[in-house]
Figure (spheres, rainbow, N blue to C red):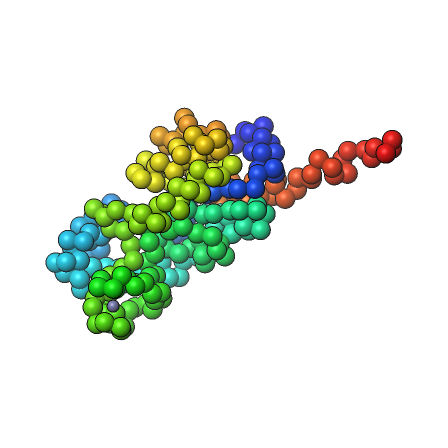
Length: 261
Ligand SMILES: [Zn+2]
């Protein structure tokens, strides 16, 4: 990580009020959440791509719920990492900080973030397939599979955006608005190539925001980012955080007092 780039970013952030953060699977993986993709996602003989679909749920809701119950049991004991904790702390450092996440594991909330936009839903929430109502449920294992809505008796489904489904337009509009309004956008632990999430840093950049990418390896976004910090969120963010908090304002005591006053 180039020192002059850290200086520049810290200097810029010191004067920024509106900051948006886009996070993806990478920051969760650092905490030990499996990606549930490829070999990581194998459960019995099934792959995530064949279970996280409306068709799979239509065909066999018990099977889909057993899979989600297993995923919930793996995620339940996972703790947020230093990257999550720094982002939670930044809510009091910046006037307006929002975390837009593609993750469904709830780790940002567990770390203490409150201003969170969950693009793909949340694995700890259930949605009534008839009424569309959403409720939180943290039981692992679920006492009954499939869970049903106590109000109308219809099946609950995971409150998650599945393959082949569109993002909730209200949720996405909020994320887009935050992206267009921010002065700086962090892109953390995501290759940001999957649409429509990929459009968020581009919208921010078009609107004049600085794009600060934190990923282990360069991504297709990197050429368009103003800054690229290679590394783990749990290492890069605490470093930036320390520098930000150490930075004294220009009126601080490094400057000799103006005796003419
Ligand atoms: Zn219902």
